[in-house]
Image (tube, rainbow, N blue to C red; front, side):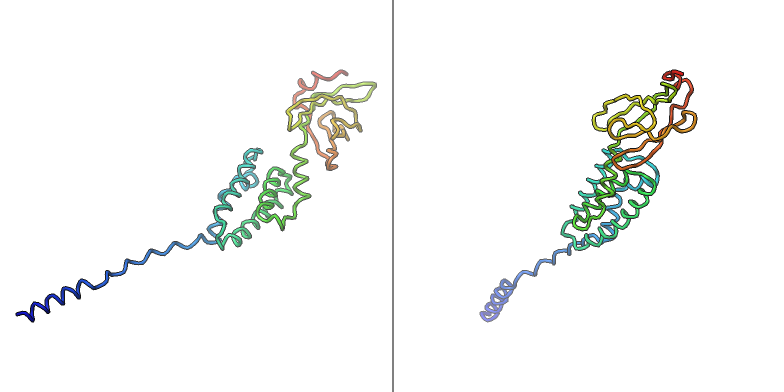
Length: 225
């Protein structure tokens, strides 16, 4: 009887000394986003830039800056991810193609936005400084409107209104062919029967054409023939 009691006590002691079972292993952390996932996210964040070119959706300065900031934010979000570099390489190839196409079609707001993104993506390897400078000059180009025509000493003069992009200030000029005005323009040619004018934008030696007012009534307000 005493022996059975000792055996029971020993079994109780042994049972009490058993260690608790180990806790279940922590679930493994999900793998970091892949290069394709990051590239897709970058493209989605900057879709407005692509739409401005492919859909001709327009890209005001504020929207362009918001798009560039969206790229920066998405890139920063994945800092430390070993797949980020590969993702950026794939994404910037798309932006390079966009930049080339936008340049050929003179969509300078898209050009500027693409340049900003490429510079932020790879500051050390950035190689579009001249193109971005050209975009800056074109985007800063004052807006010229033909207000009418008049004749002085049997020579046609053009009445221009010029609005500065930064100040929104208007200035008016009376100009003959060959004359410079507003410091950055030259009237190179009056086209047709006062239908349009060719101007030279002097900072980049870039000629472009602006149309005269479409209605005859608008034209005759300023004509003195």
